[in-house]
Image (cartoon, rainbow, N blue to C red; front, side):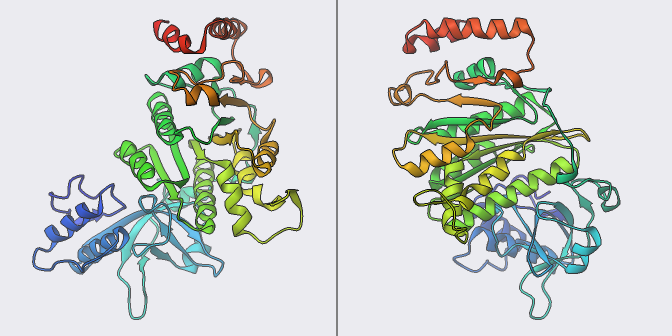
Length: 415
């Protein structure tokens, strides 16, 4: 691993990934590694990391990287890095067609191995060989079944939450989840959901040590995305990738597709994965602009192909009989007056195991618990709780509904 603080000297056999450093910290690491040669000015974070790679390689040090593979139509691919939001950058690592064919590499495989510097007219670092695929040797990875070959089961293993946050503690009581389920978070567009989803990701990781959480935030304000990454920094089981609202629609679609592929490959390896996505409407609108029209329309201005990425993402949730699970928690903003939003919502109606609904009026009023208590629930046929647990849950729901909305938060805190 790269040292956790840039003041420490890199090791002789460094594992250089995308550290959770700011550009200034990467710049300081470059200066420390070679005080006699300042890096070129005006470099981006990916260019600074590429320069750090080059410095280590120039001293004949072994450099190992750990990245997410993206396959291109030409038969070769690149390792992308969550620290760069899985986007193309100067530090990406080329993976040759022979390596792709030899291991049948697919989008989303997480690969670890040593790299070499570019040669001749080459522009990118190149992967020398593959040491690990999802933390196991390539020979062991040959035993992994493809995601489409896994057998979905009815989810039965609970997915608890550990948090002091009143909203998510209440959700854990009123609409509990199981590993492998899909849940919709319906909330007003004006609700500041990024911070709440970051809290949710931490709550899942805190209560489930064997679960890996991926937080995908799309079409975000830059400061919100940076804040979410900062809150999750240093947590090995949490990844946060996203796009800002100035990114082209193709970037939203590509990032979400690669994030989904990574989650699927991890499930193939037997891992338990939770994918938190904000938001399905964003991906549908991006798909509308990024994809060729299909000629079929769900509503005026909404092509039928635009919602396919969101549907594929949502339908990927499953508990696999062969081991591993993928839980999908997706945001679906509501309250917009545009008929396109209503058409997108109709495409996901009845597809979830559980729904969490944030009330628009309560959220606007700043209520301590802006939850729609009546609408937040797990479908009865998907609820694995015992009869006594269900009865206790309904008693709590009835108790909260009998109180004024502004008194519900205090009652829950006392309980």
